[in-house]
Image 1 (cartoon, rainbow over the protein chains, first blue to last red):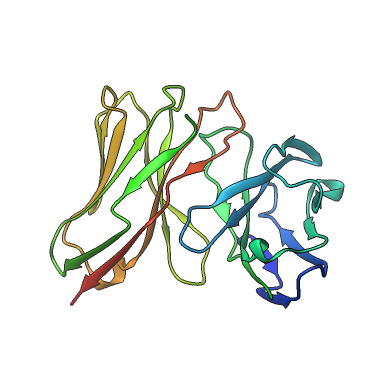
Image 2 (image 1 turned 30 degrees about the vertical axis):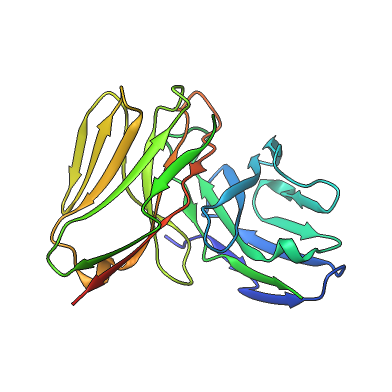
Length: 115
Length: 114
């Protein structure tokens, strides 16, 4: 089966610019996650969707970050305006359903550099 | 209380040796503890996972040891190979009754020397 697809793989922008990332989860996976991985740290959950509804966005900086999952399949994560500290790898993951028992499959990530 | 602390930050092991990575947690509600392996330029991939009702789980050269009373768990890689060189993350989450949100450790970069 095809894995989680993400694009672009790399993005360089200047601070205060906007950027968007796209994720296509594994077919049939109801749950989609966006993680932020800062260099040298473990991934941190930003937002979690179950189908097209938000389950957890408690760690999403809502003043600058937004995400949507229209039709319960693809998802986009947007940053506007970007700050230097947003430089990180943004990982998308999907799982068959909610709950820790379901394995999360990660995409390759988008490496964002904010200058 | 939501943290998972991982050590060491980096590890160098000779080929054929044993690699040991340790993690500790505070939240006793966690009941699923996976380990992820991440190669450069790739996303993390599930390696092995354990629930607290067992003290050890082995899959091939990879073993998780779990100490519920100490709230600690560790990954042992036996007969370490150069291909095992990667970053390893421990994680913790709640069981199937919750969201599945993973709390990751800081990561351990493993280098296996030939």
